Length: 446
Picture: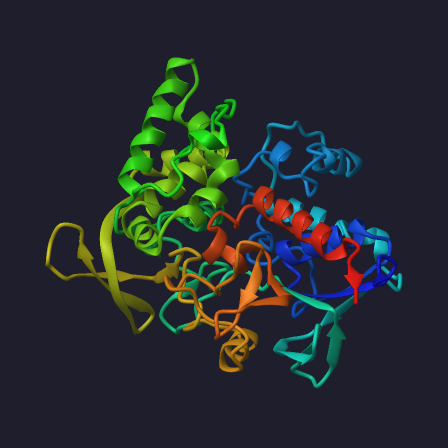
């Protein structure tokens, strides 16, 4: 047995958004002998769809104190803001644009060194070139081999259509008084409404979703002290809901709000999700996910105030209904939908339809070339609920035979099928830190 504790680890990180930058950052911090090649198709790191917005009024929906890149240093982001000349407090909300700059700065200590190589290009195929070795093929013909590959490819984005505007792109020129329809009533809708209002848009804004639920608003509070032993792991969805309601009432009786119960459950979401059988997960996705998300992913008070003002003057209207289709008619779009509780098909003429239906898209129908080839080559498979690539609880990619790869892992939203709550920075940073520690720890070779 030879001690390999001094062997160098070379990891490929595919995707340079929040998940990719956090993965690279923690790998480089975990060991002085780790080396990272980070591959990103755009010319900017740390942005992705979450933090690439150029609008300074698009705010994080999480306070500064909870957005540090380091799980054990909650003031890391605050100190960066202060060094950047921004007079911020731990409890405030800053722009997504600012947070993207913070993420990009995380890699500054290693830029120009041999330990970090940043490649701009489109990743199209990943192959296991030999035992415990992986090779990435880029669209321009370049190839990179490494010991491990971390998939940080983010959310499956819908393919563009000629009838729907992308939620993460700036819509084209719209008539100032034209009616705009937005599909979805979550956080992406909020950003789009704020941008429209800021631009001076005066027309009606119709936000449509099946339930018409808006994200709840942040208030000051303290996460409730919940122990893992008290969480009803593996229970039916109805039993879990009853338990959480009791916790919310207890939080309110203690002078807090339901938010304290939701935030107290947060550290155990992954354990709870993994304890549930597929049938219970499926039931939750159909009936409970929308309710959970509006309570879990909340709005900054500043953003909520803008929406409330627009609703009060009748400019922003919530419509409960199911979107059916949209067709372009001249300079506008005809939208067809079914109002909730009816079988009637209604039509609506609008200047534009913006697709803000969220991040839970079919991972195969909207797959990138890289994911398409992983599936075609048998190195990956879609999870039974079709919300992402299948991984084990340690984020190892599961292949077509059901075997977990020892050298290909998924981080961030790419791993959501197994972990569910892995779309917010506090969850992603912990996953990346844990995975980096595991991959860089000394191991024996025979």
